[in-house]
View 1 (tube, protein in one colour):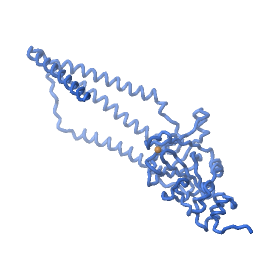
View 2 (cartoon, rainbow, N blue to C red):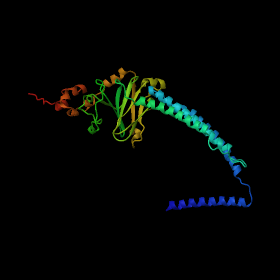
View 3 (cartoon, rainbow, N blue to C red):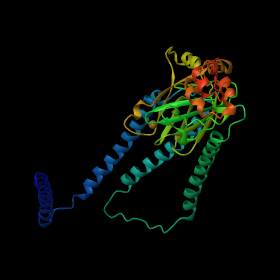
Length: 361
Ligand SMILES: [Cu+2]
């Protein structure tokens, strides 16, 4: 009720103001006063010019004064290409923006109402139409095709010896799955097999899955092709590694991929930035729910492939951490699974899962 009264009050005040304005105009006409709109047109025209100069000045000042705060070192091969595409697009749009901005305000100033001036009539101008259609078409086509080429390179299948890592997003954390250092092949997965412990839905009938391991940090080698295989368990998430100019959505029900080569290790970046505590980080850039902000994932880039493989070898296979799941391994593959996962043959889970019951005496 109160809000209705307030709204009615506002409408009434506006109506009264309008009536006062109308009455003022009518009184002026009756008295035979000259139309004042010409002088207001002049004032507005000058204001347009002031706005044009101040607006452009502020735009360029802000862009240059804060340049360093939105410039991030680039640490991947394709990142250099992506950056070039970004800056070419930026220059094309800035040039178009400045031309349109100046012309728009200049026309409002130069062609303001003046007594006795008549607008000239132009039906059409083929030459002009062709110029302003063909030039933007060529520029846009060049931008789109060079962007498409970069996109195709990023999403193309990786070479056979590429490092393959699986990243899984869920509300609200990331997990990474690595192939074991021996086979370097990720095992199959199936969402139907996901349970409280088997968070990847690891298919234990596939022998490649025996030595796969889980990591809560993303470890990468420098100078080697890496392919990320990305999936989501619940809603849309997005893998974002700003220093590598890498961003790819994690989509439930489908796999997305991203191929790249890291060119700077964590140690290189610590030296370049002069910050001994520098660490790469990965974030989720899809607003995926209440805990979205907490989806930060630490990233470490090793100096050499050997260092990276040493780290891989130091990790424990998922199956070793969850030996109960030996029961899910087909009987004929259990021994191989135990060897590959590094499970000692005398562990109680191994004995329980063994097809032959071992009895003493
Ligand atoms: Cu997310």
